Image 1: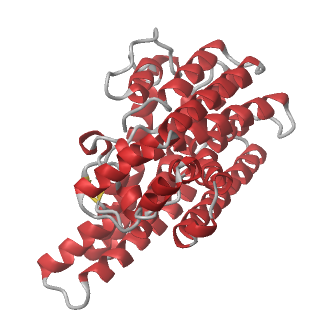
Image 2: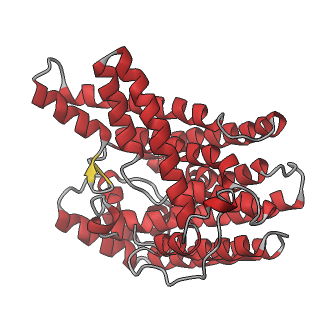
Length: 384
């Protein structure tokens, strides 16, 4: 899709194309929002270059730290959150409004996402992200290579926490660059703040579940999915985009976007639950079976325990204690044998149907409707 700079940087829609065989989300993004993803990346590159330069002028070490944070932001990803925010906005304004006015706000969501990922990797003690060492592992490796004193792992975790904090501040700063009326920006900020609160609260529930698995339930696992993932991946970005377009909080469109966002967001997390056990590490960028190694009380594992026979349930109690690939593989087979995988797949299908029903009630730009329909399916049938 060509960049239509002559039209005030307004995105033009392209005919729908087949999704990539190994990544349907990326296929839909390429079909509809190639210019958007490039615009987000270009905005981030320019913004982060200035931020890194500013800190480098103060101290070379600070500049190196900022450059590490920048690299975390630019390390890849599908730009899913800016994409949903864009279509939330585009659904209201149509195809004639210049993207440049809201592009900084859309790009800010990617900085917020990096904050969440880096902190999440510390909490989960993850080794890889997108096929590369996580921020805390990479910082620990640099500590060892440089011969610093102290505990390398503790150093790595501390640096990663600071990287996440810096990305959060950068997100706030970039959001303020959006050229929308001040009164509208206040409404946008309220939506943005609610998204951050729900993300942090959902993450707390996620952590609590790992330490209180005996008292967890399917309902509570779904609540984690709702607040940790659905809120800041789909629902709030859509509402964020609507706020950027000036839609009132009590407008019917807000109710439709909320229904769609919750349904797609929860299905997105359910898909993640499946990938966390059965995903291909070469595609997901993370080891297979991590959730079984840690005993993470995902909806998938909670359903498996609920559906299991007594002997299967006893075997499932080993989740969180297995380490070897063969043991993890056997446990994954057992989870499938309980019928939990089939149940989760049906739940995903039901949520997608709910999302599409919600779209049918919305009065929005038809290109946005087509894109959101494609994203609802692609985001929940992906391999990474």
